[in-house]
Image (cartoon, rainbow, N blue to C red; front, top):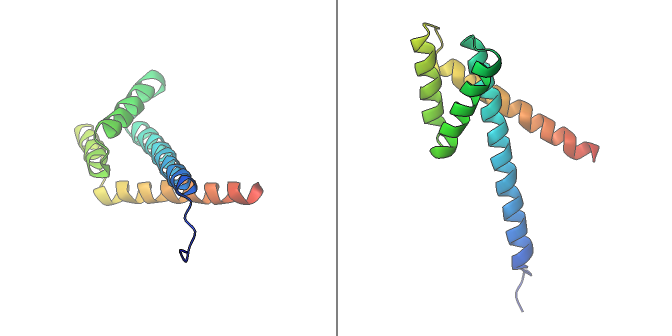
Length: 110
């Protein structure tokens, strides 16, 4: 008899739940980051929405934080807005922390 019982279906369900959670948190992070960048670039209304969609689609096509950061830095450089890579990375960390804290608060409310 095995030392630990292993229910494959519950393990797969939990793994799927974790992957979905990570996907949705990353999507939320990317949307907030894209809106921040669009706002700094001076986009409003439809221009902002279009920029956000393009940045999110770019990430979905090739899911890479490096590529997203490079795109944002390039756009800022083209608009002559001085922003460092470190500033963008700090913004990402800040957004991720907010999302994590909100998620933890939501768990405690239930």
